[in-house]
Image (tube, rainbow, N blue to C red; front, side, top):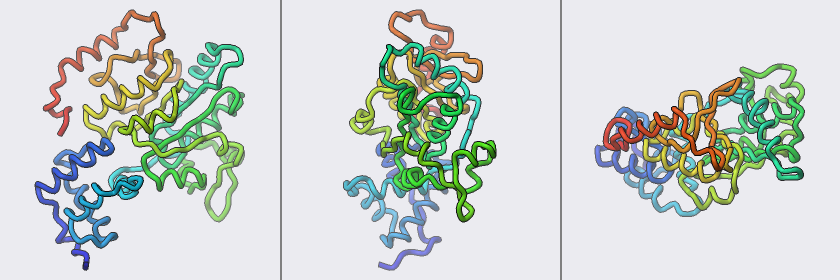
Length: 312
């Protein structure tokens, strides 16, 4: 079948609703009317590459792809931005390494397991590798003091993360001394050292697939930064509720600086650390709610699921 030219690939109202509902239900991505042009142009690339001819045929291909969601992964790569770099939002990472990790280790029973850290939505791996580097620099021992798990829904990003080879743009906020210490340069790219790579376990996880998430076990810290911005309010609540179940009591949830739980969940307390603000799952017996939790609960009560913040 000859592929249609790009100017012929125009989403109808029905097709837009069809894709919008599919991506929301399959992986949580939310597309409002203002995203229609982006959806149309980026999916048109896949229609032409696969030579399926029409958006309707491509939607059918997505829905019948039961062999590991291969095409869903490809579509997500087209529709999302995987822009990241090492030491991104450094203040929060300083809070993790210099405040949260020591607290959790001090609370650990003698001889207990390492602190478990999950980078959810790790993209091409810069975040989990940064955690290992910073923790090593602070004197912590990977495998003994902490373990890092990293997941993403994109197979392409996970493949890049496992390779551990990066272009200069990934080092825009990296101390040159650390770059030389933990990376080897070759042909204009930088390969991360095996001494860092071997301490990150990568796996493919769709955050809307609880059985798959369950395989990770319970965590002490979850980082999910600049991920839930792509979700509608109902999906955000579903994912945050899942994180609450996955965290040990007293565990921490770190979101992106532009993300908040104010109208999503009141199950976490907002902690004011020296380096940043983070969320924490209360310990048993910590029944007294703080002012932030009361504000979050009130905001949730006010949200109409059909308004601008609800499902579109």
